[in-house]
Length: 187
Image (cartoon, rainbow, N blue to C red; front, side, top):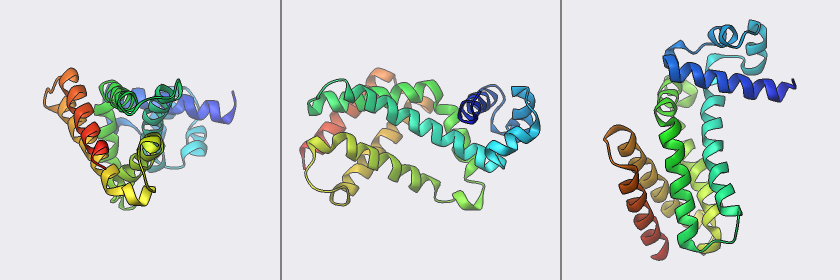
């Protein structure tokens, strides 16, 4: 197994630990025990619990964006189809791993270096949305940053409502589609 394959495997197992027992149970030692590897292997890959949590949240973010990009890349899409792909892919990921993602973010924010984590996530997703929506936008990322931040904030808030407040997936999908289309068309 290559080093990258081992890292992917360890992240998948870390995800399982968080799903089964929460973030408090996730340490480099518990990951080594769960994966059946020596402790130095987990330390070599991640170095600290903080780095492990960071790698885990980044893997979630990458999966969401990769799912959206894959859906969009299959064919040239209209604005409506692009927004539909963004909404469906994001909500599918939220339904699949939203609660453990939020736990990981909360655990990371306890570390001094991650106090601005929400802003970093907002920037990451806004930049990705700009690249995905760019055929339908005019101007640079900088010129559209406020709108892209609003799109991310809307998606994030509605997704939270699906996870924590019982908003139905269908209602969230419809609402997000309408809101994002309205915002983009208003530019």
